[in-house]
Image 1: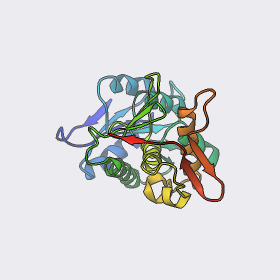
Image 2: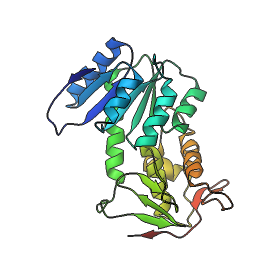
Image 3: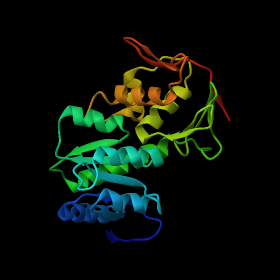
Image 4: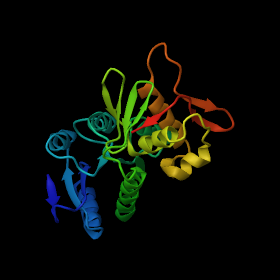
Length: 240
């Protein structure tokens, strides 16, 4: 593991890539933006580190020697809502869709400009901070037995099972929760943080992921598609 440490208050980004040159390029770019980077060459190393520390973001290469990058993304998302940026030489739209479906927040195709990657991280972190209400520490939404906490992006089922949303998913769900039984257009949702410039289908992919997490047998869909108009949360919401 490589690390270049600044002050403890600086943002920390975990990077996993089996090419040392790429890790060094990203570390240098992070330093230029006064951020801290920790580089790992295998998925196993990153998972061990994630058990000891929660970074502000993760950069994940898909071509890892010990684990498929998509599987690593899925494991990270299972553990937390930390923003994830995918690095890959695979530029096909199906790969981008798969990354988003697993909970990644952005997808960057190699070769890339390291400064652009860091700029994307900063944008995601700003979006995550901006979406949280002023009283995020005590503010939560309750609907149909579910509880959602914006501060942690944690969604809790009626049975008490917790799952974490990506930054993009959290932004969309909160927009719907704050306007229940109102139709929100795709353009509105794009303007409020759901945009992924690399893939215009990002809204639909993330809505699909949220629906899967809310899906329970013999219950109607909480999020409805209003064809030609957008999406609507079809239940009452109580904030406290």
